[in-house]
Length: 228
Length: 217
Image (tube, rainbow over all chains, first blue to last red; front, side, top):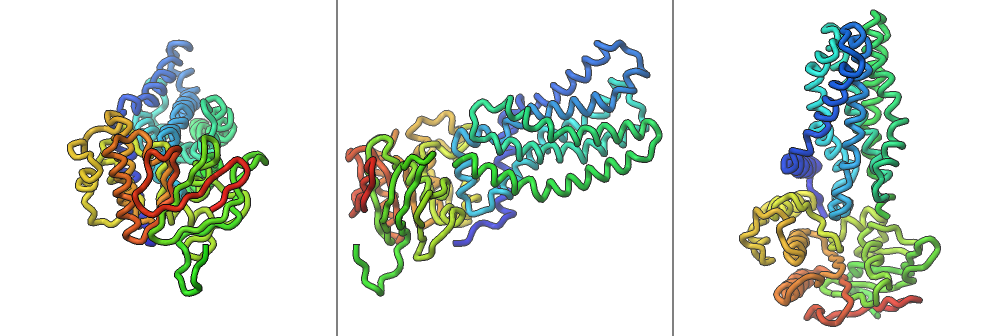
């Protein structure tokens, strides 16, 4: 029996997932609104001292992005488990890891990329110096896909558990920490004029390359176990 | 069951198939086989393990013991999954998508014949005029019909149907029977579960009784 080509399956999966996001575009704006809220609250709580805000801006922006990513993780497989779509994906003559990779890709495109694109605006709210913006953008472009991929593995592990939101957050946070440390750290280092920010970004790039290959495989194995 | 030595290998053969959950036997050991053009009706009360058996055969659950062969070759879980089409209790499609969109997705994923006329398939299961209706607006029976349309397009020779008659009206029951009949006529095979004798395919069917202790073919 000949299966469909990987490309055809990927296209079908991407079209389906994008359509689903479009049908619920109100929900899709949630991560962006959440991050905006977090960022907007800091100047209100700390006072509008530009220097103080500029100092904490990289960390605040990174934390906002990370937390809003965490919020969306549960939705990655939840509805597919509940309506049996995940079963059918498992039974398809295409590797499950491939379908999950596409699924995570669309998830990143629709939840994290809008946030990254809105970052210049959010950075303005916190008086982030303009010369640091490129570093922040690059660190987010490398870091958010890494968060999505790692999160996909953790979410897959909790697929079989009902109301796993809290557990998911507890499991994912420690794995997100290194990304946060290197991501925010690279911008901080650049702010202090240290050259080590390049190293931090390179390390994140290496992590992303590794996760791109391994995370879908691990997530597929975890889904298989969780559905048994 | 006896086979002449020259006969082609059966489509599906299970030997000593067992499944236990937390060391508690759910069914088995079961020995049975299914040739092209045959349907096997799995009988058993609630909790006898009918769904579990089908999920094991679909490759969704690992068997505790025993082995399954497809077309004479012992296969692992992945290959089981690829050789069979599974219709479970869950709809298996998205409530937010239209009937045709759902069908196009599963058709592409299963690698069905690219020239297939999806709208005609929908019409053949009685969903003409519902092409663009989101599945959430369809009734339970219509959702089942949409799942049947998906099944019809799958090229897999082995159909595993878990309660295919549930939620269907009389016309729907006749539809399931007609689909099974067509599938068997094309050399496919089907394994189906049902609680009662209220609906059964009009084709020569063998039965497999699942009891609490052990079942026989």
